[in-house]
Length: 323
Image (tube, rainbow, N blue to C red):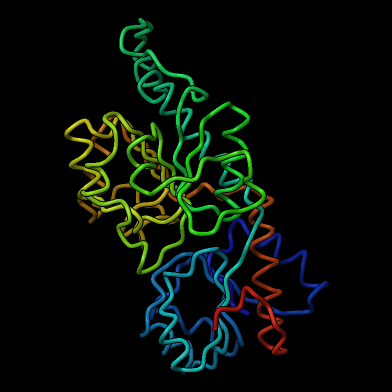
């Protein structure tokens, strides 16, 4: 197995060598056509979120790689249809939901209490109170879009704060009985003070939150996204922020982030105008796709990726194997 991005995960790969009996190589670089030869002679490559397109898949296939194991829940960064076409197996991972759920609630609280604004003024020793008045999270109605493991964990945390929680889904879950109100999608948009996204990236969910959705929302709504950037039409979000429709946005993910996050870009001119506009707003929090990033989750991701590679090699059924 050849692993891309090693600096924070190597200790976990080393710990599991004895348990799974594999050999591996590693690099801190993202996979690309220039460094793909590093994986020559290996049966599998393991990657994090990156642009894993058809050309890159072909390149690795020609080098003898049979399996791609992404150490992420989402796998929309991989051209799955092309992987199927060339007979390359692909897997993803799952991990405990609490890390992302806790981060999501943290972002909500930061927005509710205007913490970035408070800290910016504290740095210049402006300790006056004007303009710092916040609101209690427990007084908010929160619309949760996506009720997978992370969405459900977020809901349980929110109920501990006393929030009213709205959910729109075609499949009601027994675990959420008594915790949420099931509503129409437009009702969720119209009545929520905070909307948090936990849906998967798919063709059906592309730009789920678009101009029409923002128009339905109440004035002063907060948007939180710790799922995938493509769920939100960024231009529509920017317009809603400029008009004051959205009072705060807290985004751990954005559109077109591949090749941007997880790399030291100090001193670079970043070619992402939407990101530049969002960074200019004082009521927008951008974090670089780090909601998952705890020791427990990184350890989970590494072991699940290794398990999947072993299962793909042995043709063992595993729900995390995509192709």
